[in-house]
Amino acid sequence: MNQLDVYIGDSARALTAAEIEDAVRAIPLVRVEVATAELPDQFPNLPAQVELLCHFVEDVYGGVLSRENAGDTFLEAAFAVRYFHRRVDVIPDRIPRIGKLDDAVIVQAVMRRGASVLEPYAKGLKLPWKELRVLA
Image 1 (tube, one colour):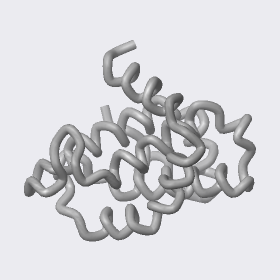
Image 2 (tube, helix red, strand yellow):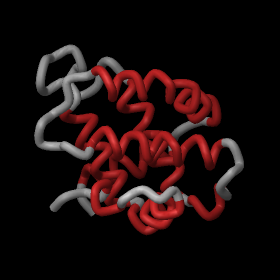
Image 3 (cartoon, rainbow, N blue to C red):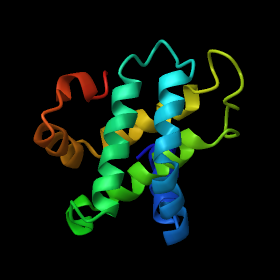
């Protein structure tokens, strides 16, 4: 397991109930950010991935999907949504062209780590997994 995976797993498991609720409340703002931010060119599928993670968090939090079946993927998706929404993180979002690069890396890692849960979820929503998956 690499250090990024350890960071994501540890950070996700450390989320409090209030922080998860904050992530859920931030989802409408995250959707606006994705639509308006200057995103890294290296991640053309980032908007669709963020949207999938937002839907997933909403559905698990709202009880549409079982939290038990979602496992760690729910916590990691909530962490990714919170991370994407933060203005100041490893690379501050205000820096043009690279400000969302670290956010994209977190989203990519969460998509990769949670693929076994997220792929059937996406297919259930009739979303094209080929366009959502992490490109190697």
